[in-house]
Image (cartoon, rainbow, N blue to C red; front, side, top):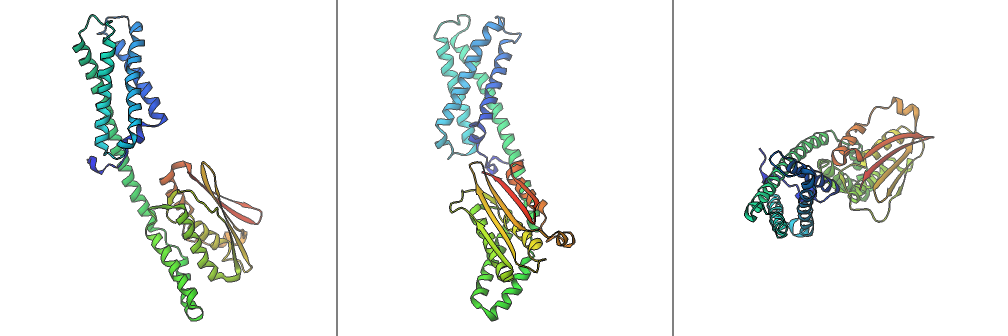
Length: 336
């Protein structure tokens, strides 16, 4: 059993959205139908349906409106405190609305106390049922997060960039020729290794782009004139978090299959496009049909990257690749 202290979910997120509003209206109308068509009610149900529906929708929508107005204060509260406030608001508006309706003196067959008590009891039961289902949903979400964390850790264990070995050898050689470049290489490798140890975490897009640029800088030192890289990156990047080392494996794949097998100069293009709904990364590298057929995998499966993206963004993130003339294009689309 998961304690509520472990749950970091926000109740407001599950209430203040379009789907929640639609669910409140539908459930409220179903409750009105159940109450008016109950065999214990002797009045004409069709005549009572409209006022009962109006009563329920007024209480529920007014409660949601109050939650929205108190959003800034409630965001600082714990999950349990938010639930308590929600129950109190529903019960308070039920009492106030019941008293207002009774003041019209159209309910002569029932006393004010009995009318208030019945309505308050129904509202309290509905609120507690919602609270229970909300807790169950939060516990399930927490369990899914724990499972996802474990899966990401498993995927992390399989991310071991093979370029580290080549780059370390290159750094050792550079020590005798250019100590400054050797130092830069080792520092870049240190950043990439640190990111690889925490690739189950999310980092800002700008940081992941920087790691990818450090990787390509190391590879540029390794290949020299054989490799040119064209970066087309906007000056301002959105504050979007993505799994660490999302871009670097795609570039490593481009190096492995488009640069290493070639004896000629190779060109890699990295383009980042930002729109209101998504961020698209396009990587173009030379396509060598014979080398692609005979060359083994570089150790980082595309499926691995897809799994990590799916855990963070679901089916909204897309990773595709195709051949376009003499160029191999990889396109990654990440939702904002």
